[in-house]
Amino acid sequence: KNQVEQSPQSLIILEGKNCTLQCNYTVSPFSNLRWYKQDTGRGPVSLTIMTFSENTKSNGRYTATLDADTKQSSLHITASQLSDSASYICVVSDRSNTGKLIFGQGTTLQVKP
Amino acid sequence: NAGVTQTPKFQVLKTGQSMTLQCAQDMNHEYMSWYRQDPGMGLRLIHYSVGAGITDQGEVPNGYNVSRSTTEDFPLRLLSAAPSQTSVYFCASRPRRKPYNEQFFGPGTRLTVL
Image (cartoon, rainbow over all chains, first blue to last red; front, top):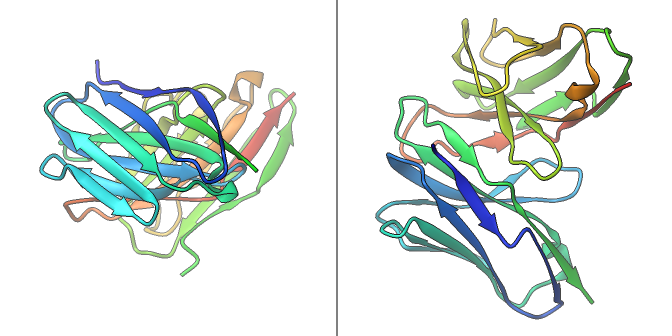
């Protein structure tokens, strides 16, 4: 069964600190992996998208890594800010004609001053 | 571009009532989808459309209907609301072209069924 598992479920860090969120998937055949940020009361917004041939992609203070062999991805946030408080969702797309998306349950990050 | 818009933002219904959640996009995207988001769960696909006149069921379609008469609009109809349909509903759209098919989400509709 195609699944996306994220850990931890929630995380609290102090402003300025770094953190890493994890995503493991069993989706096959794999097409691409996306990380979304979802602020409270808003829709998800794309941070990064990676295909199997890409193992690192950055978007400002966000850096995503992908290991297609172990089917793992991580999202590293550097020098966290209060505005980073949100849910982070890992989404994997398969290679079907419609590119079906399988969503993880998300990691809720709270950045405290 | 307004992107993906949804109305209403909030709605309270009584069990058995019907309503339509509106979704529109101005990016000329072929694909549009409806998801529901419940606490502790990932977004789940309700229905999707790959173009005007074409719709298909997703993971949790029961109790919902959709239609796609134009590229821009993709309304979601609740036929007879039930408390189990209390959720946050997101509409999304993306282009058909490869390779990334980046998906854009609307702001969501928070629905409560009493």
